[in-house]
Image (tube, rainbow, N blue to C red; front, top):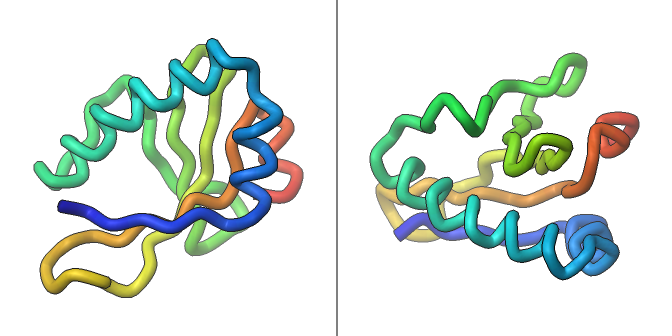
Length: 96
């Protein structure tokens, strides 16, 4: 099972989302975790590197919903470790 942690800014961003947005992200997160296990993300998440931020990745979880993350050192051998950085709209790319 992949592991994760959240940067403090991610938690603040998440808490600022509406309940509906939080639920949409959590629903997408279940599919994201399944894709992480599989080793390939579905096209709808549009996972890609953030321009100008070498180790930061982005995913799309709603039409105007984005989250940024990076990969950290494995916590469990052989399992990816995701560090969630920001969540919100395109505005998060100012400081990903």
